[in-house]
Length: 172
Image (cartoon, rainbow, N blue to C red; front, side):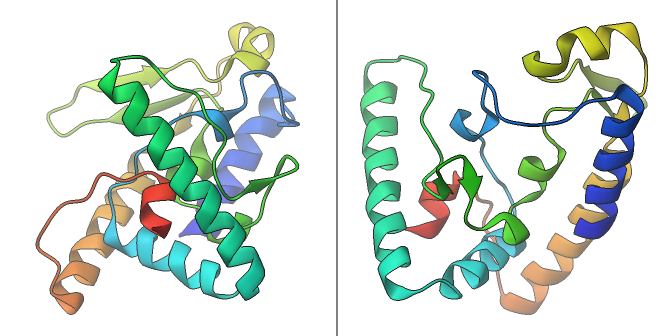
């Protein structure tokens, strides 16, 4: 499924002539929440492949992110903070990154049950490219497949609760 996501993202980016190369609107500083036990398990699996010293360093950063989130929430302030697995502009767990990290940035649409369509214009870095063309990435099949896989995973692993966690929270 992730390979299909990556291929669809790359194809859409190619149509726009968009290259994600880091920017001031860095999505790795965006507070994304992830909602699947399966992706949390996959991220942790990748995390375990790192050396003990790297895991310790990332966990330290993750705790700092969680503390900063709590302070911002207490003050009811928005927060932009670097993901704890980002090191010098690169994701140390890139191969294991969750769906939203894979699909972010490109203009997209999502067809909701009932027929309504949610549209997003994409990130600021590609705004001029995106406004001039119309090649939105349809996230619908990926969300549908993820939902089915998550149901199977939860049933197999006895998970009944829902989660809403950042990468920092998933690693701690």
